[in-house]
Each structure stands twice: as C-alpha cells, then as structure tokens.
Picture 1 (cartoon, rainbow, N blue to C red):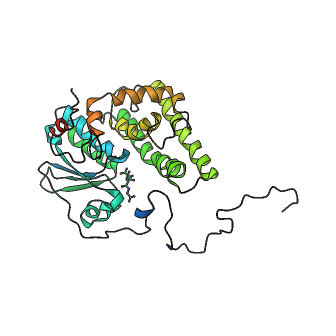
Picture 2: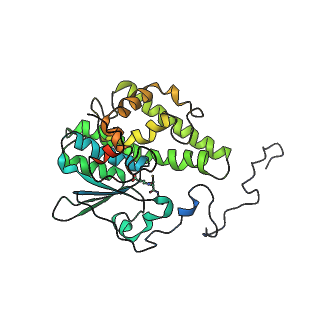
Picture 3: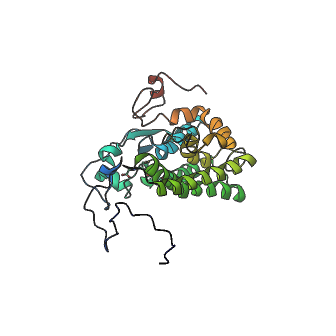
Length: 294
Ligand SMILES: N[C@@H](CCC(=O)N[C@@H](CS)C(=O)NCC(=O)O)C(=O)O
C-alpha cells in the first residue's frame, strides 16, 4: 500500500475476519434474534385450527400479512361472498411459524400462509404475492386480463417482492432493530430506500394507481410497506428519510388508507385496542366498535 493511501476503516469488532466456514455459535443480537436460525423445518408438532370458511389464513398483521386481509376485505366488499375467510393468529415472536402444521403450508416458515379449501382438494399457497395472484385469478378481480395492463400490475407486484426486503431486512433492521448503529449499513439501505420511494413517486406522478387508472393487487402489495413508511409509521424513520417530500406517494397513500376494506383489513390479526386478533365473521368488526361503513 502506498504511504499516502487512506487507512481502511476497522472491521467490527475491530479484530474480526470472517472464518473459512460460518458456524452458528451465538445469537446474532437485535430485536428478532430469538427466532432467527440457519435451518428450516418444524421444531414442534402442532396442528393448525380449521374454521368454517372456504379460506383459512394463518397470519399476523405485519405489512406482509395485511396485504392478504386487505385483499379478502376488498373481495368481500365487491360482493364475492365466496371469499369468506377465517384469519388465525400466528405469533412469530413465540415461534408459531415453526409448528409442523404451519410448515406443511409454508416450508419457508413465514406468514402469511393460506389454505384454499373452496375446491375438492385443498390448495396451499405461501408468499404474499402468490396468494394475491391466486385470489385475483380465482375471483377475476383486481388483476386485469388485457395483456399490457396485466403485465404492468404484475411488474409492480414483483417489484414489491424484490424491493421490500431492502426496506425491512436492510434499512429497518439496521436503523431500528440491530443492537447497535452501523453507519455503513444505515447509509447503504437509507440510500436504497429513498431510491425506491423516488421510483414510486415518479410512477404515481403519472398514474393514479401503480398498475394504471385502476386500483389493483399492485397497490395492495405495496401500500402496507411504502404507504406506512411514507406516514412515518415504520421504524420511526419519517423525518430521517424525509418522507413528506414524496408528494405523489403521500397522495396515493391517503387515497388507499381511506378505503373501508383497507381500514378493516389492516386491523386483522393484530393485538391491541381496536384490533381483531382473529377474524371469523364479517360481524367480528362490530365487536371492535369501529365497523367501516361502505
Ligand atoms: N416474501 C414473504 C415474506 C414473509 C415474511 O417475511 N414474513 C415475516 C413477517 S412480516 C415472518 O413471518 N417472519 C418470521 C420469521 O422470519 O421467522 C412474503 O411476502 O410472504
């Protein structure tokens, strides 16, 4: 190295170099350390409950879970009575996602997971994007059939599946959940998150919804992540990311938040005031004391 070359920054811990082969010899630290592990598969025998409706959803009201409850509530609001569903709570903090019954539906041990029991043979579906596409195709709703419009919607659906892990697993993890702050990691993922917000902002400057002039599964996929981020409701990072400057994202976020089905869907599988930890009937919303009028 030349004498005037800048000194490279220290690793953290300063004496750390990655070993030849990584081994799981300690908890990683951070908010979700207790449920992180480097192997898949069930850790306990645990059957899942089955309710009375054609669709059995096993989930939690996180941004990934909310996509599906919004879709069900939107379908029901359109009059698709065949979209009635039971929503069961999967507590990922206590490891419900590693029970054998859940792993049978989702070998990836993550919510949301859906059993479609409406036909002669039950169908399992995991990955929120696959679930929304399955429901959209089944009910012929929220996914255009005309090739160009359909391609646009599916492009945004896949954009979300590829982008959200940078927001949640990247920015959210290092900004809010990691046991200490690492400037390099926060800078890297803040830059990417802002770039993604700008992608959405430019699209929404030209188009009322992500897929075009109609509300579709693309909006239902993206809103729970980037809409909540835009309102400062994710990672307490509104000011840090200057979310107010994304004006078109703000307009679209408010428009979708005002939909009655979205208001219902976002309180399902959550604990706390004015929420429904489980949902087994449309009348369950009355118990919350805040039924959203159509
Ligand atoms: N790509 C998946 C992501 C699902 C996901 O990450 N779910 C999280 C909650 S938001 C989870 O279940 N985490 C539990 C774990 O990692 O053990 C999807 O869209 O369905």
